[in-house]
Length: 247
Image (tube, rainbow, N blue to C red):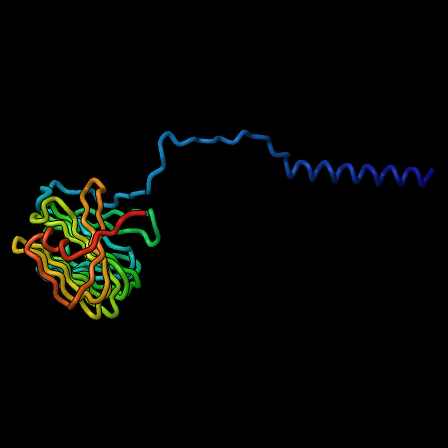
């Protein structure tokens, strides 16, 4: 009888402990997850950070570059730089955005016009674009430490063992982009003005690409016989090249 009573007391103790434990940890309620479907195709994210001012478009310049450490200076001696944490310098920034379609993200700055912008960096694959209402020029590649773009349709890349692409779209290019790809030693430049086209610094075999805003591109193989190539017109330059046929 005593054994049965002891067993009963033990069962009651276990039951009380079980009830207390259950009260401390209430059972989770089942919920139905909410799923929000996109209403339109996903596009690369662009985050506006600073609201643009009411400055006329013809007075603004857009600068595009990788969001890594850099310094940009203009013809007036003003600078803007990124030290890895924040933007510094005295150059006015009207608008600042980033696009995240690739890593590192692309920084887009809207600044007042200047006749010249110089970009310096230690990033291994830099690129720098200057876009205004009058012209659009860029440079990218490897081995570059400095890129200078001016409003006279000139792009200059400097560094060491350059493997680069220089691009110009100017008022004198008849609505067409001109890209030059190739290798150079310490500097290479492309200039497209009302006086003609000058390509300097490239050596060996390269490529010339002519295109427009509608994506109509034509590629040409080009052998640079020396470090200076000049042509009065785009047609004269392409006469020295060999069209690359698509497969």
